[in-house]
Image 1 (cartoon, rainbow, N blue to C red):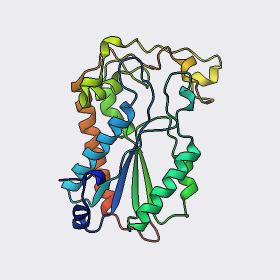
Image 2: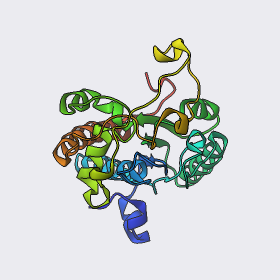
Image 3: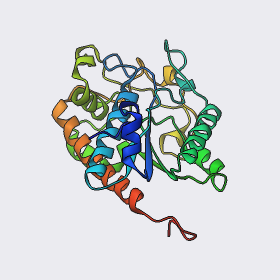
Length: 255
């Protein structure tokens, strides 16, 4: 069974018949401490999108997975070498053409599975509200079963190259992980007190915040932890995709 558009032939796409929902994973290319690859956000969300869509298709969803996006919003990582960056305005233009392409094929539902915290899509999606015939859904995949992440991980510190993220990488592509190279992912405290408790926000310059682009200690990471997290998240996303596929869009949608 196939769900990835890039793996399918014209005959296979035609044989699918009516496709209700397209899924796209959107990641990033950036450093994550010293031990996991620049592409980990993109590699992971690409696999999460495919596995989730396969689970949904097995339940009857009419779904297709678009090519994953490997570059995200990363200007605050400049200062580390080879950081790849799309500005939010660039992402908006790219999404506009994706929507145009979907409308041309009669697909009226799109689920963006986000794999990178710097991709802030909510403002972009509001720009499209009322201007497209495609209903756009958004999910940050790591929040779908945050309870499992909290249950599985021992060191819950940080958010970037930490135990959770490293464990997922060890599950999906262990050959690219070099845990022995990692540092402890310590970060500097902000001088403004309100930034510590969430009262005020700013774009954080990652080279100043971190030592080697890591935020959180990865030393207790294991592939078994990663598998438990991925299994739970893709089960939940599979159910979500099936619901989106089945739902009827009318004048009162989504209520």
